[in-house]
Length: 366
Image (cartoon, rainbow, N blue to C red):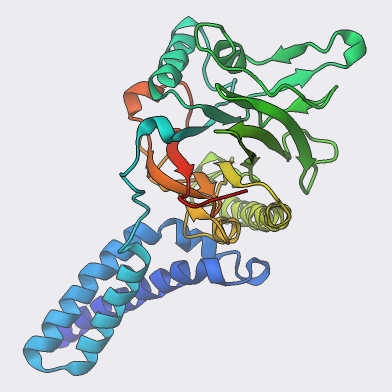
């Protein structure tokens, strides 16, 4: 009897810890990050936690209904309701409409340092030609513009060089800021009118990696603007830091770095959102948010916009979380969003791209 009680106590303690972790991750998008940045760590695990809590809820409901323990029935029902509210619906798009009426938008974190060589260049070209986005936004891939006095030419990293080949068929915006290194370029098979670059904290004034771009383009005779963003990195994982696995110093370093990154992402999301609110053109937002749909930075950027969805994008080899996103303004409606399979992106990037199909909402007038 004593052993049984001990085991029951351990089981209920484990269930309590599971529910507590689930609730902290669940609440992360709604809590101020200055004080509750640490809840983002639980939010990353929320899909897995929700699955476990769902099973626990089913067990409590069944046990409560069978034995007449209405408290357990109520707790189990409440847990199932929370899971259903967050995960019961996902963006599925609208299947109606011809594909010719849709704008295909692709976002892809494509670091030149990740892989290169003829095989990788061919793989990248084949992927983009197969997905055929009309607008392609990439992160980490860089280009450097020259001044008009130097001929207005470009230095580009190898992924851009591949994408700008005539056989692939993409072009950069017609007007670009001179003498600027750009890490958020946008390419198109539609008319891209111009691009502007905007700094972000903490170092956007001096570091071109800490900036986002706004690209003005025209689709079916109507003007629009596309934001290409890459929010502050999460930082090194504990297992990538020097030291032993049991080192408390390693984990303290990780938590300190993670806190700084979470606060920077929150600040960046606020600034970008304020800029979006001032737009007079229909908006698309693409990029690597370094934030899942259950974290604060993503939810803040989502305000007033719609999520295209798509699925997990990172890491590419075995995607567990979606941190690459496409968001659209109310003037658009989402037809579909997909994440291409591994065979298309293997060794080209450590991310998978998201490809969204959007079209003008019925009745939209400028």
